[in-house]
Image 1 (cartoon, rainbow, N blue to C red):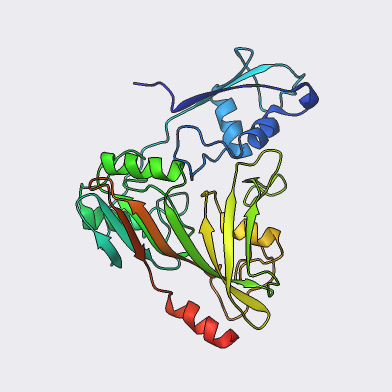
Image 2 (cartoon, rainbow, N blue to C red):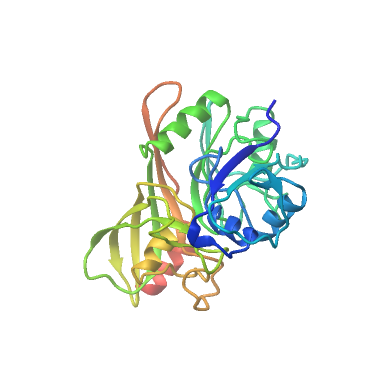
Length: 319
């Protein structure tokens, strides 16, 4: 059995001389994906880095250091990432809107406000808690105790279709399709401002925002490839109803890309900043369509989740 979840080795650039090691590591590892799936990241906050240093899990040239250690440039830094403390995640009898289910996969139409898997501050009421009750022990274990069955995620306030796997073979197949960008994923959104061109593509790498760790941003220096294709369904009064096709699946991809071209999503306070009108809870974004090769039959399957009532009401109000 491995002693650590992961071991990361870095060499500090000469240009980083004089910088504190905790800042250097939190910035450098801000979008590190490690052994995790394509669409998720480990959270290397500065406080977490400081804890690792205090626990003797960060070495500089094979020696223990303190959080205030200042780099001279050229050092070899080793970060040993421990396994997370095991938490007891309990099944909960939460109603699920099941779009499709068989012995390998289950597709859910996720409501607004539901977190996909347990994380800090959300250890109950999640999609995982509901799946554990519904599927019993029939969920893949590849992503560990916190995310059984979960192959990909959508944000808490994004509604729509999400797939989970009931066994490891199905999980590996869907994970490979995600990696190869062969899964069909269409989203619908309402964003600010009318469009002149009715179709377009945003091809801009996404990484952690260097000025605000809670946000992602177009980051051409340290970001990962991200491509979003969009088409305008209709221009509305000061807004637009759009359809987006994801070629990649980065954290907050549609939200970041649309904000980067001056069309932030309606209700998205994180990337728009404006107080949302209409008493909205989060961004107006819906995962409408999901298509994939079934892991057992090898046949292509495609499913849709209808627009939620709040979304349809907004469209009528804005026409």
